[in-house]
Length: 127
Image (cartoon, one colour):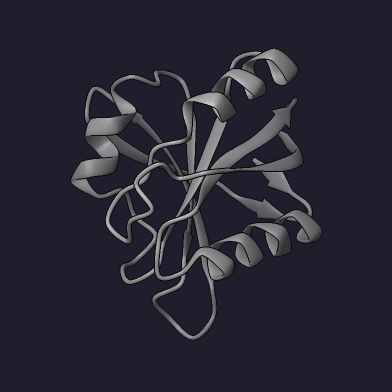
């Protein structure tokens, strides 16, 4: 996925504003390029897991159709899918998972496809 720097900044700002809890939302992607970021409420308000508020999910479906990229943050660990993330991804086939990592001095973004519990990192190109 190609993503403009201003959207990266928006994702990092959201992650920092929700810390120590994980943030979450969607990235609208068309033709391999991120177009917009949409924050959601993490119903767990937890540093260990996230789930997009159901009202937000319905609103996003109505406005954008099927999700192609869901994002969340890892505030204490590397931006790599946890087993909780992998289990959660079972219900979201074909979705790209963008994770904002805040464990280091500089934020780190990585993106993944998770299918049948197999994790595959996909290129993330900041423009």
